[in-house]
Image (cartoon, rainbow, N blue to C red; front, side, top):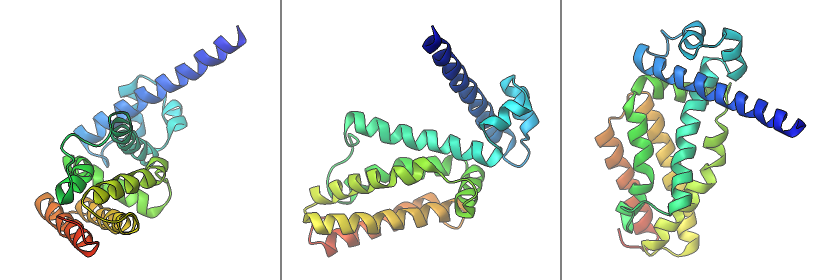
Length: 200
């Protein structure tokens, strides 16, 4: 009986959190991050402002929204392996990274806000940090399929990962457009593969 009560409270808390995050995302996308207030999120979610704040302030809500999406992409890959379009060479590596680039391009304002929050370090993205190793391992696997030796694939994966992060930040700040970002990443990946003796 006690465990059922505790479980139902935990489930209710998780349900409320999801409701708040869904309302926040809707409003952030429709009205913009700056125009969205905690009161508006509370009204949209049908909860009190205190309940919203128990989930997080606006910055924390935005980080959580991005984290949920990032985690879903990684979970989908873990369940089903590499993307179907993942071959070898540059295309195989790009297939791992492109979903993130496209997500950042969906709403440049939110991406800019997210990047600023992460850079400020006030609200750390746990998922972004935790899944970095997973993405680096996926990149190393793709580079290995392109013919790089394990040590070169590992080094190349880190190079590509950090180039990817830099490009994401530039996308978020509006200094790089999607086609240029993709081209720049393809160049970095091609360089890493060629440097490691693989086939692009």
